[in-house]
Image (cartoon, rainbow, N blue to C red; front, side, top):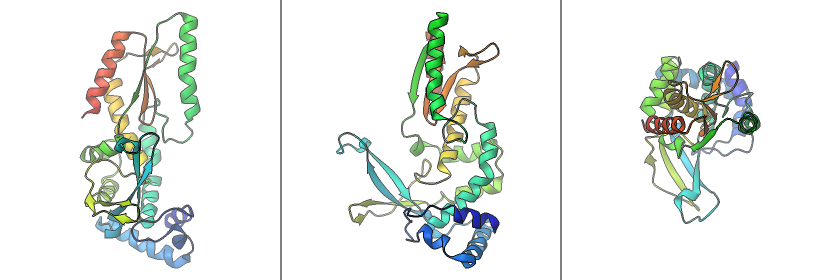
Length: 271
């Protein structure tokens, strides 16, 4: 019950609710009654590996980007999910985040505690300055994976979770959050008919950044860690890349090595 209470209290006020229209404030002000109810419900979910139907429905809100809004690529979507499901996801995340963080590559700084985006940006500048000072060649290839959140293969994701040491029980509960998941798009004041979403991780789900990192981590490990190519960072270490979520900076002293590395990353990413 302590986990339920802590994660209930950590919900942020003023956030959108899901299709059940129950806001975060309702859970935070419900007192011991809501804590006991959620405790029993989450225990039932854990034992039976079944998710309430309302938790498997999302409302997709369109948010504009820059540029011509007549183009689909200049819109992004965020899914409003049941607040109750977020309590479950918070609890799951608290149980797996540290274990996953320990096995992720050091080069990855995105969505990780105590990792600075500023440092990740400053490092290529330092590398460039050193290369000029030492008169050594340097190639940097900036890679941005397109629509990664939407294209993650889910069956592969469940296998990777087990591969990274996440207990099968937790993997099964995460899977139930995705099975038969449907979305309705909100357009002005209207709703589309619900449709199934069978690929990718959920936009707006608390678990999604961590699930996404696992997918990217596997791709970069398969593509980059099997070869010694990279730049000499210090006497004992070669640095092959710098990553911030799906934005990668590949590093190499030789053009041929950079081409090989980029090709292998592209081929591995398609899997």
